[in-house]
Structures are given as C-alpha cells and as structure tokens.
Amino acid sequence: MPLETIDFEFVSSLVLKRSAIVLEVEKKYLVESRLLPLAHKEGYSSISELVGKLRVGSPNGLHEKVVEAMTTNETSFFRDVIPFDALKKVVLPETFQKRTTERRLNIWCGASSTGQEPYTIALILREYFPNYSDWKIGITATDLSTEVLSRARAGRYSQLEVNRGLPAPLLVKYFQRLGTEWQLKEEVRRLVEFRQLNLIDAAWGILPADIVFLRNVLIYFDVPTKKAILKKVRQILRPDGYLFLGGAETTMNLDDAFERVPLERSGCYRLRKS
Image 1 (cartoon, rainbow, N blue to C red):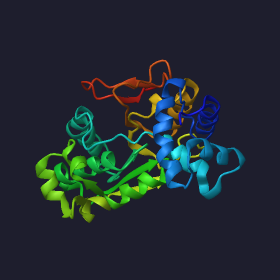
Image 2 (spheres, one colour):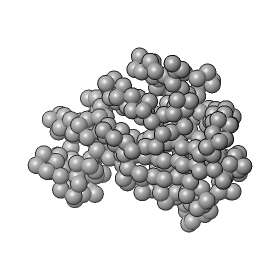
Image 3 (cartoon, helix red, strand yellow):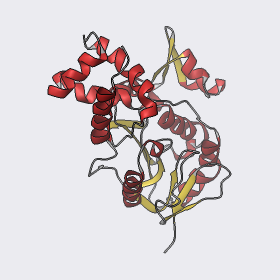
C-alpha cells in the first residue's frame, strides 16, 4: 500500500530530528522504497504497521534503523576522478612538503558510506607515495550508518563495485578474490579507521585534519545545517589544509571563511588567509 501522507510526515520529521536530512514531499517514493524492505526485514506486514510501532517507541532500535535506511549510500572508487587527480598531483605533494618536520598527516572522510572513498585515498598513498610509508598517516572515515560501516571495515566488494572506477592494475595488486567478491588486502585496510558519527552531533572528536573529504553530503541538508557543519569543519581543518566538496556543492553564501582553490573542477577549498 502507498505511504500515507501522515506517515510520511512522521518519518520525515523523525529523520530531520535525528540526522538533519531534509526529505521533501517529492521524495515520498524514496521513503516507500527504503522502508518497505526494512518493514519486511523487521517482521511487519506493511510500512503503515512499521510507522505505527515508531509512534509508540523504538523496539530493537527501530528509530535508528529507519534513519539509516533514509541515508543515501551512493559511492564508488575514484568517484568523479578529478578530485583524486588533484589530490594525487597537487594536494598531497604540497602537504607532504609542508609536514616534513612533523612527519604526520591526518585525513578525514565524512559520510564515507561503504568505504570506497577512504580506500581510494589509501590506494593513492600506497601506490604513488611509498616514500612516506614510515610517516604517521591517519585516515579517519565516518558515517551515520552502522550497517555500511560494518561493510566498509570488511573491505569486501562485488564485481560490479570494483568495476565502477577502480583501475584494473590496482584491483590485481591490492585485492584478493573471495568467491564472487573482492577484498582489499590488509595492508590497505589497516590504513583506514572507520567509526560512527552523526554530522549534527555537538562534538565530532576528529583530530585536526590536513585534508577533509566531505563530498556529496551537504546537498541533503538545509541552509542552517550546512552553515553549522562548515563551521565545525573550520574548527578541525588546519589553517593550510584542504576541503573537498562534491561537484554540486559550494561554500559560497554559506561560509565566507573558505575560498575555492583553482584546481579544475575538483571542488577543493581552503581557509582564507587572515
């Protein structure tokens, strides 16, 4: 049965409160497509029955499961290519040079989904910057969904997932075949620490970062939330660090402390010098 308007309004309100993700009325079809499998998985005969349970409580963490079901987990290795070319050719070489004395580099990937983005960064480091293997390099990857984080930690991907953007030589060199799937080798997986984080949490607990990837996530929030998130990014981004946003995202008219870096269409920003 179609999702009743009153039920859609309840779910959208719940998702907004728990994650700040805005579900416009035209997204009703998306809510239906995401909640029906969840309803069946949790033993409910319909979305209406599931929402009824939500109204009176959160059995077995049902509120959290609904919010996680509404998050978009679209991702791929080397997604959009250009940002990773900029990372490899400009941002990492420059940052390594600046950190020669410290010999330390921290990278944060927000909304990391099933891990392809942070693992892409790890692959770039392993393949193109082997001379820095003795540095203390930390890649922290966070996401709201505990389910996708579990998948990310395993580093296992289907043939379709590795076909999307991953160069064949890197697949052969850094993955091993496990039945119908491919798993990243331990040497790559151990470079990334995955943990749960809600971007609207008051405190993030992220170490000062040299490079931040927050791509294709701001588009799901309203303007006040975007501003609040960028303000917190400012607080953790080192003064000479870099912020990567998605191709459809910008800091313009949201946070004047950032300026765009002229690196083609990389969606790269840095803090203005005072």
